[in-house]
Length: 66
Image 1 (cartoon, rainbow, N blue to C red):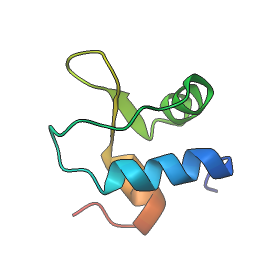
Image 2: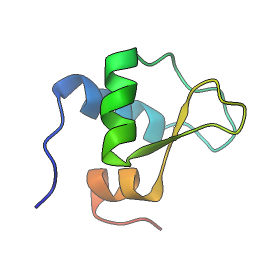
Image 3: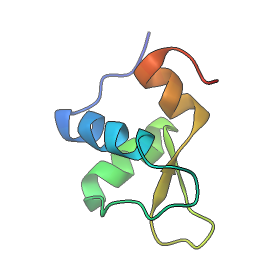
Image 4: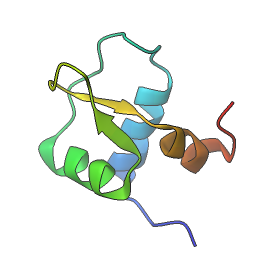
């Protein structure tokens, strides 16, 4: 069963999904970032200043990761 997320986390995940890889991500509230990181749906960026959506995050939104 898929883990339930808060409305804010789902909105943030959708925003991150719309951003291309390597582009600047929007600011994410700390509580939402922690929720998404804990669910494995985002990962810290290589620079360590923000998060990027993961394959699992895309699967959460669409059921597909291609």
